[in-house]
Length: 99
Image (tube, rainbow, N blue to C red; front, side):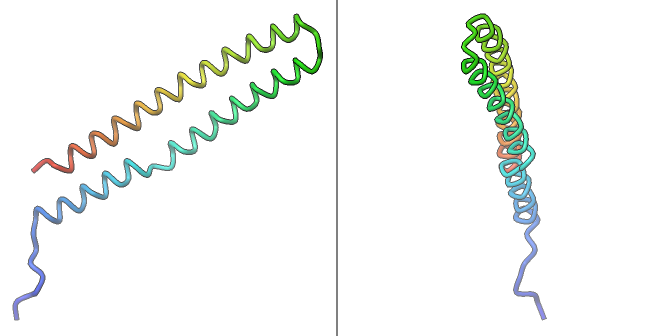
């Protein structure tokens, strides 16, 4: 008795490729990294608020300058992570349409 489901090598390959794309899009490691970066930025904000509350202008300038650099570095790291994420998704999408 012939099977009602015919094996299609191209479709099977395409399903695997969809899973690869899905994995590239939904990779939770990136979310975890962004959570950590958000904590760094929040800590910098809190340090600046604490310095402002002290009322000491020199202290405010020193702390806020340092924390501004920390925030800039965190934003730079975020862009690098996003570039990596975009590259992975684009590669997985391109692989999806290869024969």
